[in-house]
Image (cartoon, rainbow, N blue to C red; front, side):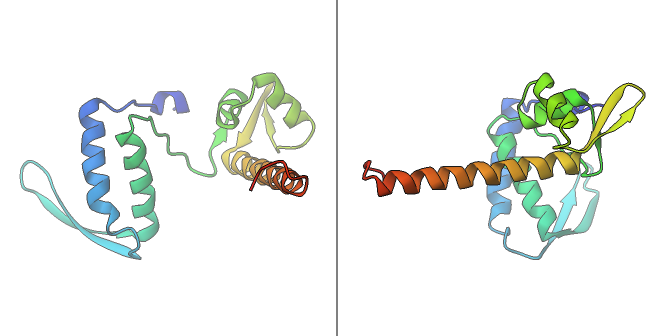
Length: 151
C-alpha cells in the first residue's frame, strides 16, 4: 500500500467530531498514561491503557483532522519511493535525485528504483530545518547590530 492510498480528507462531520474529541482529551495530555473505556453501538466495552506518547500523537492527529487536513501515519522503517520522498521534503523530484546522488540522504536501489528510509528523510529534514533556523538567527543578529529596526 502506498502513501497516496492512505490519504483521507476528513468530512465536515469528522472534523467537528475530531475537534470535540481533541478538546476533551487535551486536558489529559500531560499524563504518563491514560485509562480509557471505549464502547461501540452494541454497548460492548473495553478498558484500555493509552501511553502518554500515544495520547499526544492522537491529539496531533485529531487537531489536524479538526482543521480538515489529511493525516498520514508512517512507521520510521518505511521505505519511500523518490516521489514520496520529494513530497515529504516539499522539493522537486529532480532536486531530490540530486540530493541522493550527492550522498546527502542515504538510499538503496531496488532494480533501477531508489528507495529511501523514512527515518533518513526525517533526519535530513531535521538537519536542514536546524541549519535554516541558525541562518535566520544569524541574519537577525546582524540586522540588530546594524540597527535595521529589528528587535
